[in-house]
Image (tube, rainbow, N blue to C red; front, side):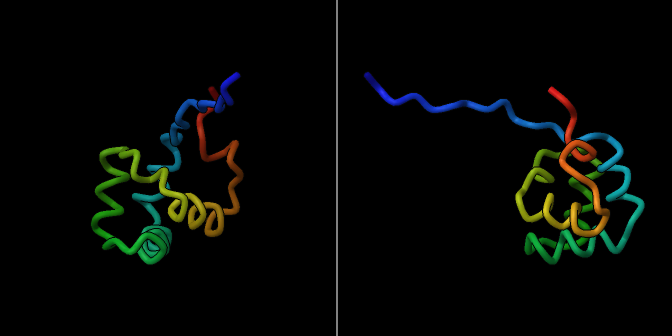
Length: 77
């Protein structure tokens, strides 16, 4: 019998998180520092509601800066 892997559905970021990124310069700066991208790239991600915000380091920076939990960042499935 083959080993089976659990396939998880991709999580989606809530709209409030994108709005927070656009409104909060310090948060954009922290995400840019963590991901190695420019601040303008991060604001473009938020404006387009890009899946690049799902980057582990970006989510970690959001949690650290805002104090939000996964439940507050991701949409429920």
